[in-house]
Amino acid sequence: MERFIKNILGTVLLLISLTSQAQSEVEMADGMRAEGKIYVVVAIILIVLGGLVAYLALLDRKVKKLENLLTNKKPQTK
Amino acid sequence: MKIWLKILAVFLLFYVHIGGMLFDVPRLNILNETIRALYFHVPMWFGMVLLFLLSVYYSIRYLREPRTEFDYKAVEYANVGLIFGILGMLTGMLWANYAWGSPWHGDPKQNGAAIALLVYLAYFVLRGSVENQEQKGRLSAVYNIFAFAAMVPLIFILPRMTSSMHPGSGGNPGFNMYDLDSKMRLVFYPAIIGWFLIGVWIVSLRVKVKSLEEKILEIENGKIY
Image 1 (spheres, rainbow over the protein chains, first blue to last red):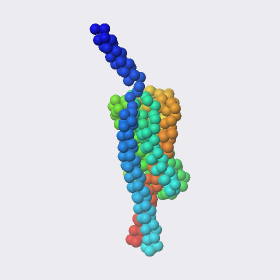
Image 2 (cartoon, chains in turn purple, cyan; image 1 turned 135 degrees about the vertical axis):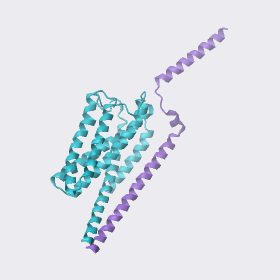
Image 3 (cartoon, rainbow over the protein chains, first blue to last red; image 1 turned 180 degrees about the vertical axis):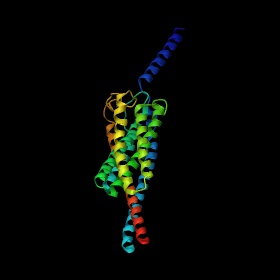
Image 4 (tube, rainbow over the protein chains, first blue to last red; image 1 turned 90 degrees about the horizontal axis):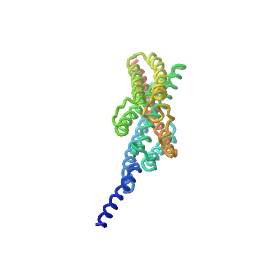
C-alpha cells in the first residue's frame, strides 16, 4: 500500500514538474528544426526566390534587347 | 541600374531568406515562431516608404524642370511602391490573424496605412483622368507631394499618439520589444536594403519600357506626318 501511494505521488509530482516546465518555455518550432525539415522549407523558398529573380533578369535582358533594336532602327526611319 | 547593385540585391535576399528562417529569434509568447514574419512583412513597408520618397524627389524635380523622364520616374516609383504597400498590407493581415486574432483589428497603424494606400491609388486615378501630357505631369506631381505629406503622419505620427498594437506605437520606441539582443537587425536591415533594391530594379525596367513606348510613338508619328 505504501509503495502504491509513493508511486502515485511520484507520478503526480513528475507531471507537475513537466507541465510547469512546459509553461515556462515559449513554444517554438524546435521539432521542425531538430528533424531538419526546416531545411526543406528554406530550399523551397529559395527556389521560388531564385526563379523570380532569374525571371526578372531575363525580363531585364529582353528590355535591353528591345532598346538596342529601337535605337538601331531609328536612323532608318528618319 | 548598375549591375553590382542587382547582384547585391539578390545576394542580400538569399541571405535574408536563409537567415530569416534559420537564425535564432527571441522566444516570445503569442508571437512564437511568427516573429520571423518581421523579416518579410516590415521590409515591404520600409521599401514602400523609400520608393515613395524617390517618387516625390522626381516629382519635385519635374516641377522645377518639366522633363518627361522625371515624370516617368515619379510615376513608376509610386507604382512599384504601391505594390510593396499592397504586399505589406496582405502579409500584415495574415500575421494579424494569428497574432491579434483577426485580419482587420482597427489598429491605428493598419488603418493609417490603408488610408495612405488609398491616397496613392487616387494619384493614379488623377493621372488617368487628365488627357494633356503636360497637365497630367504637373497636376500629378503636385498631388504626389501632397500624397507623401499625407502618408508620413498617417503611418509614422498618428499611430504613435494613440495606443496601437504595432511595436513602435503608443509612445513605445520601435523594435524595443523584438531585438533584445539586436540579433534580428542582422537580418532585418539587409532585408530592407535587398527588397528596396529589387524595387528600384523593377522601376528601372518599367521606366525603360515607358520610354521605349514613347520612342515607338515618335517613329510612328514621323512616318505618318
